[in-house]
Length: 43
Image (cartoon, rainbow, N blue to C red; front, side, top):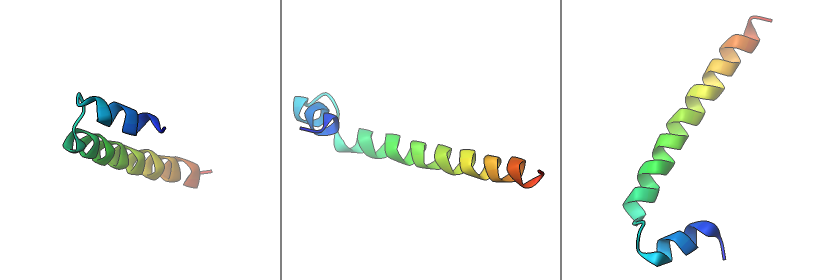
């Protein structure tokens, strides 16, 4: 059983909580990739 389904089945975490975290991590990931491309483009 995947960890996220286990946490969801306990009732402590709702779907909207997972969606907010996923969106935040997605935006953070884009920022990290964008920054890495800018830094590595200089070399």
